[in-house]
Amino acid sequence: MFYFQQMFLNALDGIDTHGITNGVVGIASTILIISFLYGAYQAFSSGGDVRALGISGIKYLLLGLVFTSYAAIFRDINTMFNSVAHSITSFVSAPDMFSNWMGQIQSYWMNNGTQSLWSIIGGVGASLSGLLDALLIVVALILLPITYALFALFYSLYGSVLYVTGPLVLALLPANGVGQLARTYLVNMLIFQAWGILYAIFSALMVVLNTNSVSNVLNSGGVAGFFQNSSQDLLLALASILFSISIALIPFLASRIVRGDVGSTVMVMARSAMWGWTGVKK
Image 1 (cartoon, rainbow, N blue to C red):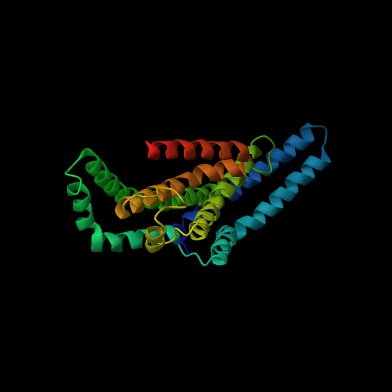
Image 2: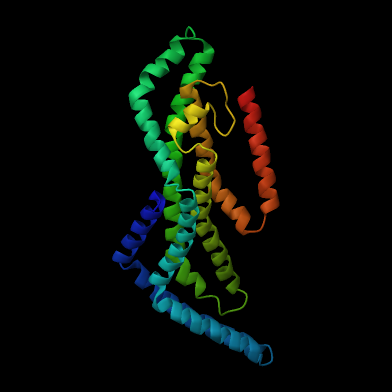
C-alpha cells in the first residue's frame, strides 16, 4: 500500500473513532426524508408525475441502504480503486516509487552528498555556474520530500472532506434541482480516486523508462534520454525535480481527465514540457 493511502485510512479510522461519521449520517438521514418529501411535492405539483415520484422513491431507498453501511461502502469504493492502482504497479513490479526514490536519494546524499557538493562549487573556482548547480541540488533535495508530503496531506484532507460531507450532500439527491450538488460530489469522488491511479501510472512509467532507482539513472547518464552529460549530483537533482513536478500535476490531471477535458490536458502538458526543456537547455 502506498504511504498516502495508509495515511488516509488512518485518518478515516480517527474520524470513525470519534463518532463523527455516525453523527453526520444521523443528520443526513433527516435531510434525506425532507429531500424525498420535497421531491414528492415537486412530482405532484407537476401534475402528478408518477415517473418523477418513482425515481425519487428509488433514490430514497437506495440512499437509505447506503447510509446503513456508509463507512464500509466508502472504504470498499476506495479499496476498489486502490486495487486498480496496485494492479498497474504489479505489472512492472513497481513499489511506492517516489517514496522509494526519496529513500535512495537520502542514502546517496549521506554517503556522497557533502563531498560532491563542495567539489561542484570548488571544482569550478567557485564560479556562478558551480554555485547555481549546488543551489539546484539543495533545492531538489528539499523539494521532493515537501511535494510528496503535501500530496499525501492533501490526499488525506480531500478524502476526509468527501467522507464526512458525503452523506449530507447525497441526501439531497432525491430532490430535483438541489440534486445537482450530489452529482457534483460524485464527480469529485471520481477525481479523488483517480489520484491513486495516476500515481500508480507514474510509478510504473518510472520503471518502464528505467528511472526507478538512483543506480539506473546514474548508469544511463540521463533521465529518459534527457539531461545528458550532467554531473551525477546534478542529474539526480534534475530527476528529483522532474518527479516532484509529476506528483504536483496529479491533482490537476485527475480533474481534467475525469471531467473529460483530455485534449486540453495533453496540450497543457506538451507546452509545460517544451517550456521546461527550453529552460534546461538555456
